[in-house]
Length: 165
Image 1 (spheres, one colour):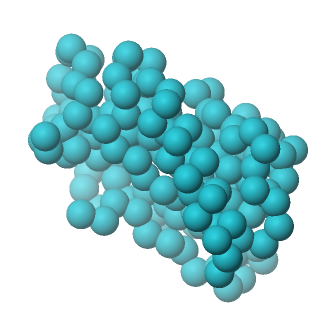
Image 2 (tube, helix red, strand yellow):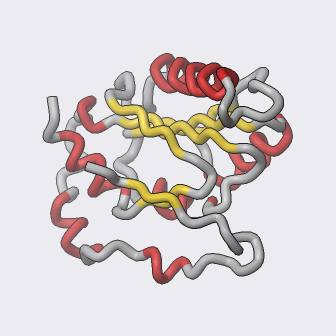
């Protein structure tokens, strides 16, 4: 099931995105019913490591911060790889706490080069090595680009993933 979509980059810098238009089609009340028991015992099947592979900026950091605010407590980690170390640190603050910045990021153009694979390996390694705040090793890794946006709330996504062994 595809949980994210990529926004078209044409004109993205010229006009700010309409965040209200990105609201999920399922009502928040319905999603809250689906995740009502997320404060119970931690379910390690529902732990996710979000891996941001970006050039310079996370275009939709406000959307992602709102998404992470709906996550069950301690059920996720966030890691960020940016070609520019200062940019990664700045966006780690914008995305919220629980953000790991990849040290010694792969420099230069990544697209159409093995360097992209090296950067993804660094992210996957970081995602698998850091346990979530609830003590679980993340069972799911979600690679995210700078222009991806979530379609559902984090609680809904984690509740859905909990149903898979």
